[in-house]
Length: 225
Image 1: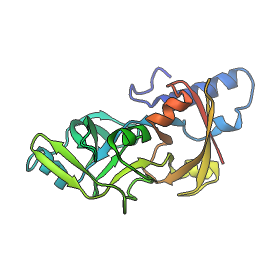
Image 2 (image 1 turned 60 degrees about the vertical axis):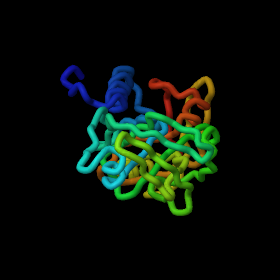
Image 3 (image 1 turned 90 degrees about the horizontal axis):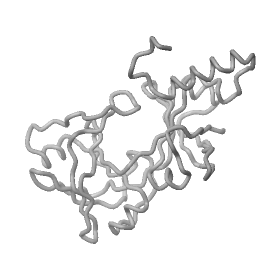
């Protein structure tokens, strides 16, 4: 495995190691280890997705987001730019990270603890489903941008390539369970499946959920239909 590219995802490396170890022991792979791709579970901290219009209002005309760190999904990145979120109690969160690239709608994703602190009553929604959700004010170095809606708590979900969906026997928008094997072992019952050709196998939970189950980089997690 020394010939693997340096940017090979951790979950892919772990999958290959498991295959090799079980092979040398003369054992067959357990069912959960036979998946075509390694499974990653990542905590999605509070962040926002913005349109080009919002970026220009906050950072100046013609401004483009600057990629700072690539994310697990191909093409997605954490931008160098951040904004200040102003809540209904005039409380703020500064340095709210923007995730790029720009989208066709504005959306802020908070954990439940964040929402309580700011005074929001936010629903749990899938990304993009923002109709009827609370709005907010964002502040950047060039000015303010008012969002009439779009503040949500993200529904726990798993990104899948069609090959992964076929392996697990699920389809787009099905619901699965995810068992987190930790000292604070938890089973999440409502992990929504999102299937697309561009996706890598990865589940997203928020900071509240990650802290509650004691998720660490080496915590073993499995999907259950």
